[in-house]
Image (cartoon, rainbow, N blue to C red; front, side, top):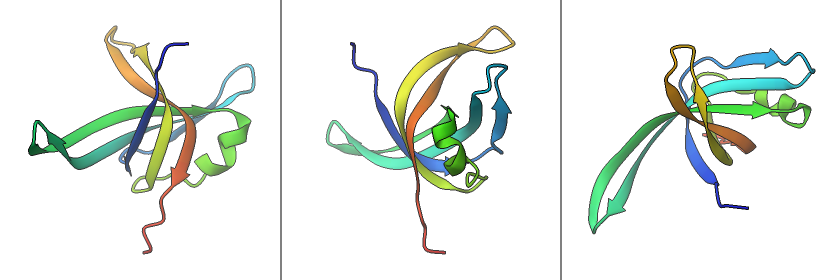
Length: 105
């Protein structure tokens, strides 16, 4: 098996879409916004991205009910390419694990 693993922390920035496939598998789709400062070639740089995330399966259904806009999460999974209705490809993070981050508010 070839390595394909991504861990990303961020804030949910678009309302999650919850669907159930014709075969009965629940899916939750949302967009995660990540912002951080990273060191590259000895210099600090700002890193920013928005990553579409999908998490599937009944085992994750309970945690996805707690996800709303503004929720901070750490997601671990693999990336894959999805073709949109417009024919353009986009990278999507398929979550295998998700952790809600308690901000203490």
